[in-house]
View 1: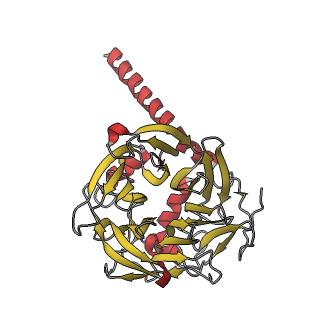
View 2: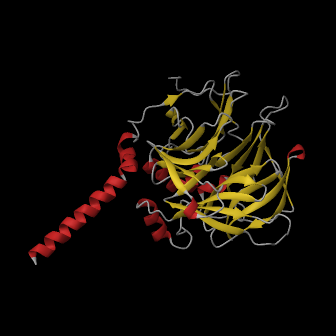
Length: 404
């Protein structure tokens, strides 16, 4: 009997040791990135926060550095409705919710313009934009919509010159349970991350356990859409499984980077077939370990991977729980605590380089960069305005932290 108890004790200790070792990355952030310890850093020239009175709670941004425009995905109702974080207070979206066009390279550029939706009347609570992707060849704009009636991917034709987006239809499938980020392969094929297997809507306890145990149940899928026949269901193929699959960015035609928020890593996958043959054709060729929780990813013209995310999970959770109080622009720091940001870049040759750390602009989810014009944009899940920087012109409201 004593031997049995001893064996069970050893087995439990081994399991606990394995668990804590596997979670060492995120656990270390609780200590080293806690308030009062985390050091500010800003390598962005002329950085500042702009348009705080126009946009807030923007989760994703797409940049077209050829034509010089960007599209923001903004949901000011996120304080009361966030299906990823489990906030289900009120699904009614504020009127300023939507997609915003930023003609940053235009001489006439003044401020972001909210795109007018054509043939799209989702009703109250049924448009909560998250991840977005634009396919320039077809002019199709894909938008993850965490609607009250169910999560789906919306397809729009972008009519940039007139500030409109014409709705073409929705994409749904049983394998698109929790779509989060999108990368377009071509006009009819997408790579999409499902951030969880269990949803906060239907299985909140299991979804929370999936997050905190970093269970590899989330997925990266390929979605093939028949654009020639309206109403034809998509073909969805599972390519890989991992924990909390978040941002997706193509490095080339056979290589994709996928963020694991709960794993504090970015996995780089290679697929010789070009993502056509499912899980048996996918392999991890690089694991980028991070000192923060990665959210969305982007790749600039030079092939540099930009990674945005959250240094301190408890601070982010405190900001999420503050919820409705933060919708008040006059809320105090105690009523609406801040959650810092972390932005880094990575290349296979140079490794990881930190670019921005701090709370002057919080909860960064996506960063994009126009290399030729020497400027960039970052957005924050729970912050107002957008963070911009430029190598030539000073921002409207320079950040208080110094350049290190």
